[in-house]
Length: 94
Image 1 (cartoon, rainbow, N blue to C red):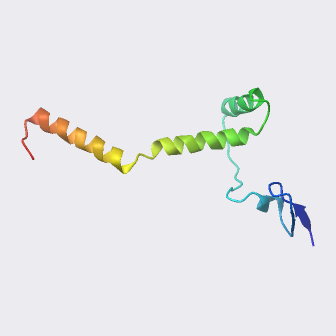
Image 2: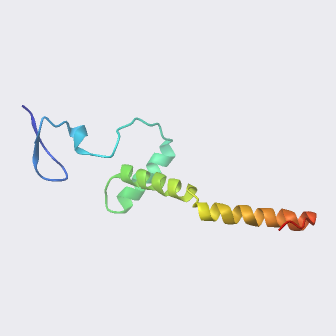
Image 3: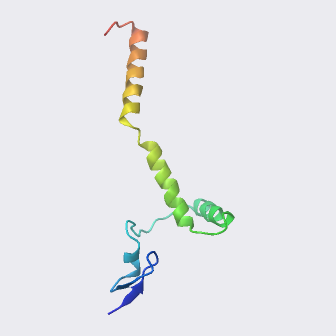
């Protein structure tokens, strides 16, 4: 029986793979442009070290959150667009 120390909790798990220790994350292989990867590595080094992969994950998460427009904002945008079109065409809809 194999024992592995958890990196996060400090206790020993029996029959645990090192990949099982990080819950909520999926290991993938991805190809990134050298200059992009160099930039993230440079940012991690400038911050005193750390994991550039975390920086990439944070950047992707921020991008996703910015793309998620709340329903209220969508409705406001659509109403503004429709009012603008209505004014331009002279429609008098309620």
